[in-house]
Length: 413
Ligand SMILES: [Zn+2]
Image 1 (cartoon, protein in one colour):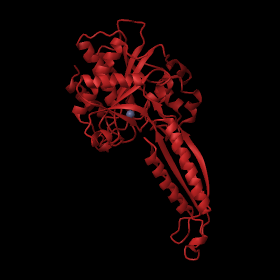
Image 2 (cartoon, protein in one colour):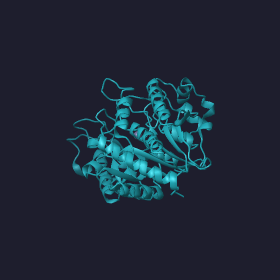
Image 3 (cartoon, rainbow, N blue to C red):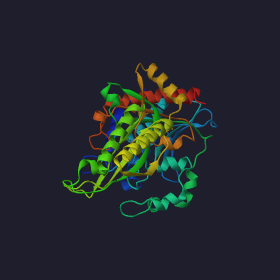
């Protein structure tokens, strides 16, 4: 069985690499700290008896052979990069749990038909270049060469430059592409980064889907005027229209199952105490794990906002900033995860991931499944990020059990 102490000790040790003055962890992609973290993890992979290699974009792999050399590999993994002043669980837990799973299998002399590969994906967070999931895009053949020049860090250095400085050849990124015949399934253990599990006292979440974000920008154009001299009947108040739109967004998100809607940015012009706002713009982040439901919510919001603006004699224009398709986790893998929870005598709670993960990029490569463990107070991407040792171990046990089913019996497909 998995060793709780070993996992926890490694997690603490890894948290010292890239530790900054905030007490949190800053490990950007293709940085010295991320390199050091990967080298430490490579050492643990080798201790676990894995053959290790780094691919053309910096993804680190550790492979445990199965009895059938031709069988596709079960992938277990996560990432080691972090946001600025982030926590020590988002990513590292999934990587170290994966190593713990294969090391315990080997220690228990467990043989599997399928090989198992522990995968450390390069740059999941997108914190350095504003463009994430680089490693998982690359293995799925979704990293276009043009992206290497387009995305730049705060110093103006391109992704391609960073790869080169890291000792890689940006012209060779195609060599990172893996085929469906090589990968049987992908499983990732991750912290929830929300409050659902903790608030209900649940130890394990089984992810049904990953909600892709739709970002829209709304611009409301009314007429500014003197706050004292313009009677209420003659107003074209852009902010009042925007306020009504925000309530529509909130209501629609409450009505459509699984939807969340957030207005995170609002600008008001001209912005004076005694001036009726003439132009207001706001952003909407709309998510749902099911694309048709997200589309339905979007449609309802657009219709109702338009109606409200018509009534208020305010013009509204809508611009799409990004539209990322939500991803459904494979029902077959969800089944294996539920079965694994039952065998361990723990309940697995179905939930949606509101945050993006590498699995989103892998859906055309292989079936994808995710296990969540509780985040204290839902805090993530901050130094205070915390998941208890008991929860980390329970998640690792579920991962072990599910990986065993997949690698031994080949339940999927
Ligand atoms: Zn993560």
